[in-house]
Image (cartoon, rainbow, N blue to C red):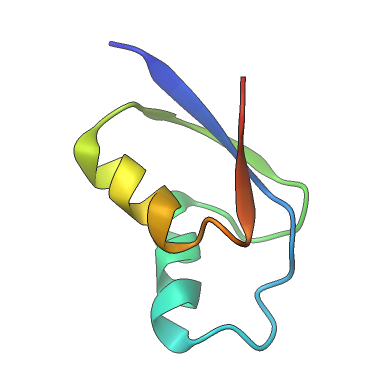
Length: 58
């Protein structure tokens, strides 16, 4: 299965609580942190929800 690297670019300060929880579920706690996940519809949905705070790194 393909993997996806997600990097947090912007701060979670001021973000709604559900977006903060989504970042926690992705494993992102700090800025510029990169985590790797399997490319599943659930992960893609979480990335889409916080797309203004993260970027997908190849």
